[in-house]
Length: 295
Picture 1 (cartoon, rainbow, N blue to C red):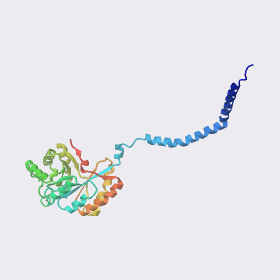
Picture 2: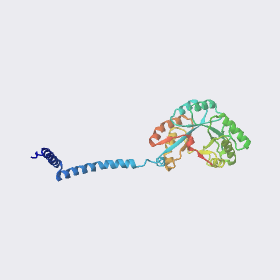
Picture 3: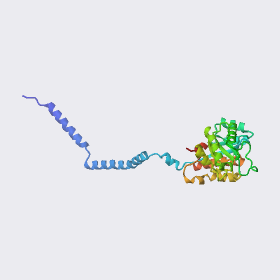
Picture 4: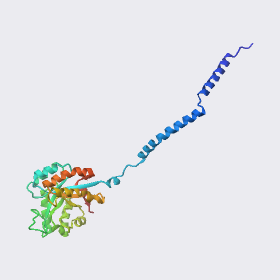
């Protein structure tokens, strides 16, 4: 007589119970539809955020060229340095890379140069040159005159440069007559090229040959755009400084070159304009940013 297969029966009962339990946990068609709808709605709500994040990540950073379309720069030179040390200290405290042009035989020339060099400021030789109004208008000691020959010009220029050590460039003081003399001006440029210096034309004459002479000899060159204090007084200086935006509207990104003098009103106007320039996105840069290499 065979024994009853208890073990098989128990195993079969367990399998049947597991199948029933599994079937009970399966969602009904209605439950499955509701679940799928909820998942779809959640995905749709999250999609815009993901898409926006993807767009931001895929958007290229603005190029230097695009940024520069709205990037405006000015450079400032203060002439006639070497007379008033108090004004010079006041100017040097202005938080901007202002350049200073020193007259070669001014009474406080040595102190001014030592002061500026210690502060790593750009120094220029403010080279006196003959104006049309000479002798009623005198350019002062060390001037280059239209009647000089080449040897005299070079000798005087070397003497002036020796009087202003650390000069990285030269700009003219007066010189409406001399700057119109292409031959003599080229002799100046030849010597500057030998010494590795640049030239900035103060544009004291509409007939200046400065750019042509610099290009012919091949030295770095720039020219003045605005005189800050052509008319003396605070209102005139402030107006000239505010005109920077109008002059820069052409969008060529060329730094605008401003020249002024160490007058109290000019100094105050420069101090007052800096916050306005900052709001307008106008930056003060080194005068060397204005230079173009001629050849």
